[in-house]
Image (cartoon, rainbow, N blue to C red):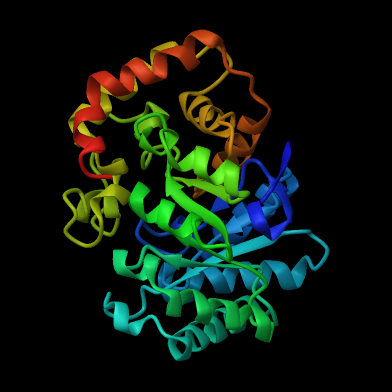
Length: 326
């Protein structure tokens, strides 16, 4: 597994990480034993970055990772968690007192004294330009509660605002073959500043796996059912904000470009991983087989024909809609 520096943290992590939203909630039920098996299989495949959040399953994802860390103290895992979605999304709630409350809870869930990396979890836009917010985060670092901090964003403007702050170690952003806007300004700015990019939703919520048709349905407790149009949270988190039927059509064209011996999902993950400036890509997994296949994408060399085709595919299906919003 290729290793890269995780921005200003100075830590070395695998280019393919593991997103653990699926192990908490909102993707259908995943048993505790299956979740722990996914963590173990990922570690065995060379994954050294686990991404989680305090609201995934109301802490279930963090607690499962905590159990894994306790059983595997020498696994060399960096855990990136997120905070800020436990309260109403009011900038007034982003205070040092709240940060202490949230990080203390995550420290208990994960069973650690110091959190490796804490990311603001897609907070209101005004938060990204608040000096008081960054001062509070700097205080948590000075106190030893967290080692580093970053942000998870919805828009490129939010990413650029965070990159401009010298304490920001990482930016997590949606980036995949159907979401290319970050390539224009965010990745260049991050490279220049030494900020790490954690690429989330690399499969566009599964669209780029090539397994879906326009008739595909999802469980009622899966966000791909209940947040299809942004009913519960930002629609960009579900299918990267693209219309499902349009996304299926584009995904079928993408799948046709994938060479034999590689799955469309692996090609999609590998495409993100090869971008200059990306520190780690964090696909999720609900099974051991998915975890292993995702990790294997870190060693795939894509043909030039596929790499060249992605921008044209994006321009034809998505550019007009996505560039006006994110």
